Length: 205
Image (cartoon, rainbow, N blue to C red; front, side, top):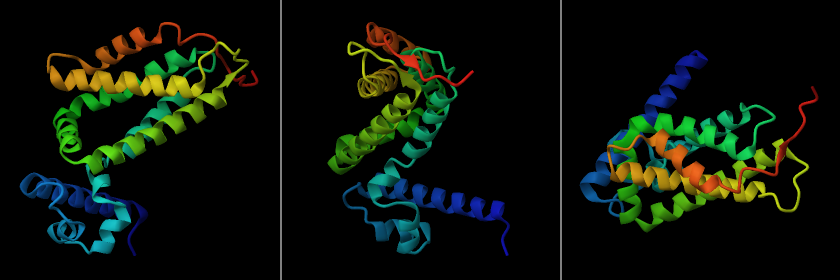
C-alpha cells in the first residue's frame, strides 16, 4: 500500500502531466479546438482522471489560482493584529508578487489565452470574484469598530485586487519593472484615503 507522501507525489505528477499536455495542445491546436478527451489522451490518463483534478479546460489555464489564493490568505492571516488593513493587504500581495516574479512566461501565456478565449477570461473573472469574497471575509474577521466613513472590507479587497492586476499588466509589458516594487507603488497610489479608519479585532491580549 502506498504511503501518504507517495500518493501525494503521484497526484502532483499526474496533475502536472495534465497541465503540460493541455499547454502543448493549446499552443499547437488552439484553445477552442482542444478537447478534454484530447488532453486526457495526450496526458495518457482517462477523462475521469482529468475531472478528478479540473472541472473545465479553462481551469487548466488558471491552475495556479487556488495556490496563489491560499498563499495570499496565509500571508494576510499572519499580519500583526494591530496593523492597518490596507498595509496588511499590501504586504500580503507583495509576498505573492515576489513568488509571481519567477513565472513571467507562464503568466504572459495565460493573459494571451484570456485574450484569445473569452471562456478563459470569464472563468478568470469568476475566480477573481471568489478571491475578492474570501479576502473581504478574512478582513471582516480582523476588523472592528469601523465608522461609517471607513472603507468596507469589500472595497479594500476589490481595490487590492485592482492594484495587483495593474501591477502585473505593467510588469508583463516592461521586463525592466520589478513586480514587488510595482505592487508597492500601486498600493501606495490607490491606498491614499483607503488605509485608515479600521481597527483590528482584538486578540484578547
